[in-house]
Length: 455
Ligand code: SAH
Ligand code: SF4
Ligand code: F3S
Image (cartoon, rainbow, N blue to C red; front, side, top):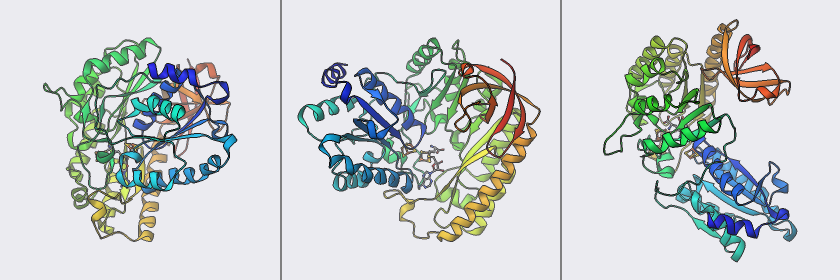
């Protein structure tokens, strides 16, 4: 906190605006909320206009090459500011890119305009680095330290007042052969149960109604404790907290999803009807090459069991196209699995080799045109299924937590059904943060349209 006071003394109204852009997953979004909290405490003010900012923070992602290229592109554009002494902005880079040796090298060698670099494990050091930079005009780098839960988390500047992300674990142990995350975020570390409960109680006291629990693989929560506890036990505890009306979580790995978790959708009052369960591929051969450690049969079995027990649940997934060696037969198996599982929606990705991972050394890359063709066939099928499922909901009444004014039409509000489907409906903005019952009157591939029937 001292550092924040010292920073506060250094800045004034002409030099206190910060701009933060977040790339990548919810973990990064939540880290940005922590960075925003520290800067707000130190007296900085957030701006959405990069040109008027004095401090720019880019919270980066390494998951695919295009995520990194976006950052390099923006850094190139930002070079203009360093040429003009009257318009000299401080540029800070954080997130997963600095945690990778090759990206860190490129950032430090090619972009002289970066002033401060810190990693996902050194967020708490940012105020000190900023102070050193402002005081001594010294470029600062603090990365590659190992993760330590002891570090003080000062707090978060939550983006919404009615819903919040809550970290329950950090890192990943799975080493899927294509994935950079275990290299950038390190090994799994679970947060103690009591600490999570305390945070959620505090959120509830401040009016938060929905929490989303975050972890790369929440199903292995607690495995690293001396006395292991399971993810479903954690959910059971959080379900008791008064004021929290909706609990969601991201992401589950199919390899260790338990029957108990599938039953929790029924036995707990506040667990919402949505399971995000990345499958990646429908081919057993490719799943093995990816080191996913489950079979298509096991995956389909989990989906069937979950839907049977919870008929109103939505199941969404991640699918990758063009993993090295993927044949037409492998891809057809993915399409077949999509037809069987009937996902409500899916994130689809084209495989991107990440230096340092096992898959990057595989040589049998799939031809680009073939990948593009498969990608289109896959998304066409997913869209067809999503549209069919959304149309079926016309006429139903859904309980919706109102999130915000619609980005495309300010007469409309936007929220999510329990099953995480997007709904747009006319309404006044004082309903944001409240629950409404919405009758579905129309549907397209990506969203539902409704009318509020009661508040
Ligand atoms: N921990 C989560 C996934 C986190 S990364 C899980 O295992 O379920 C989010 C998604 O990015 C992954 O599910 C995968 O589909 C995709 N992804 C990861 N590495 C990728 C790569 N090298 N190329 C393309 N997509 C990738
Ligand atoms: Fe990456 Fe696999 Fe870990 Fe998910 S489970 S973060 S895909 S290594
Ligand atoms: Fe990207 Fe790091 Fe998340 S690589 S997806 S920001 S864990």
